Length: 281
Image 1: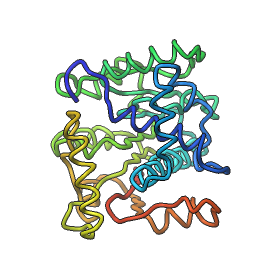
Image 2 (image 1 turned 135 degrees about the vertical axis):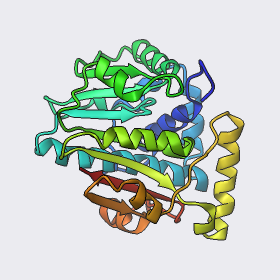
Image 3 (image 1 turned 45 degrees about the horizontal axis):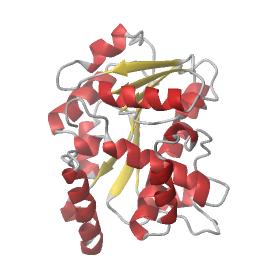
């Protein structure tokens, strides 16, 4: 992230969520009636272009992963809420819309992101005439200058109560020390807490054909100032999450069985480059 600038990759993610609503056949993996309205008039042309390119291999692969990981996180959140969890933290929230379609009346949502990205999101909400959500708390954090735990506590987060943290599409942009610092913060929370995140495998663990495709994506995000930095193996993930008691770490095959079975549009996950993990305290 460049100082003072909103995240451009967050816009790409939001466009893919919106394309899923417009271009993919129901039932949608992620039902998100806010995904299109939040982009407003400002991004109407960008959305039209993204819809026109919906069948391009790169577009379809990324869109499928984006909507799946949000659905997976929200499914895990629902499990936690059923057990009494009342706090949900979106780390690197970008233009996430969960707080505006939250089905859990007693759940408080904290959105953590760079100040510029949050200002951008709030301006889009205002321009789109979307109503404010009373259960959302914005926590602007400059991760190079501020401490996550201190800023969450300042905005009313209760560290004595369990919480779920969704950390989607973020950790690959972080240096390892920053990743570890955040994990150590989450690991201080009581039993019943969880962290959900996706991660990318090192190139050495990815088939050659897929490695070439990922190199194109890596170059693209590097050019816009948000380069990939962190790649982990499943073994390394288990080591980094040693403070957690239960870990579900999934690749494409079980996720396809869970979310994409019997779809007539053949929307499904491909490749071996990315995985998603849910770790419980």
